Image (cartoon, rainbow, N blue to C red; front, side, top):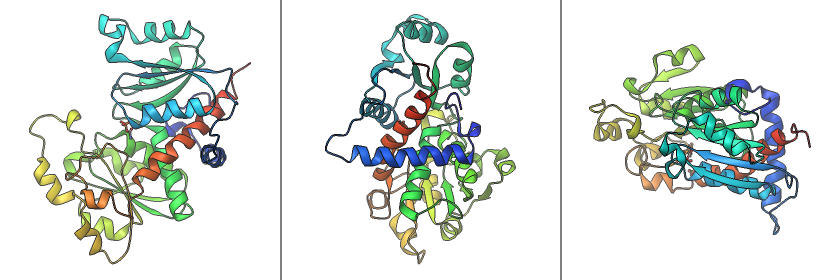
Length: 304
Ligand code: CP
């Protein structure tokens, strides 16, 4: 595709190609010399209108490992604060001869909107509660690495599905690859339309964990909640928090994932997050190779 705006716009062949390319780049970044000269002639702007640690640094590192020139923009320190619009901001950055824009924005559809109004390749690094395509790609890549394939695997996405762009992108990506997907959480945090995507809802955490091979545990997004939301943090942890005792009683060893940042002791306890069942830091490691693949493949379409 012309941009990476969401997993919704990809097909299985696109994902296979991204993973094959990521395999190559994962080998590259494990060599003593971690860089390739592929994108020496490409300039990339990372535009973050919302906070980030992993995604921002992972994109920047991926771009530098590909030898692209990189500029970083954080809205909170920019002229957005003086009232400059999104399109004006991006067109001014593009006037400096930028080829690819990576953007995180709090508004749903911000990447699609931008792709229609500016002349650059756009990569969505998270648009509000909508999609986070590179997170879903690195999540599936990490499942494939840990379990050999995604096809036929049972994945439960646990927690605050309602506010989660990670959940929606994961559902699309996992289904394209032939995985079975359930979501588990309080009904107030599960969107009503989720079953129309072919996803089953399980409100009993124990049953959901007994069913799955992999649990992808979401962060409770307090910043996106209205006040007095049910359940309270304490009730949430009692009903849906994942701790070692629950996992030990399953009689099998499931894989634990979390996109980060973690609310330790809320959706997951520290002993689980840091256990050998957890592949949380493998997800982060794989994010660089997967983002290198996405950027490299999009850059091949740029006329040079
Ligand atoms: N997983 C993720 O998107 O983390 P950041 O918000 O730190 O980028």
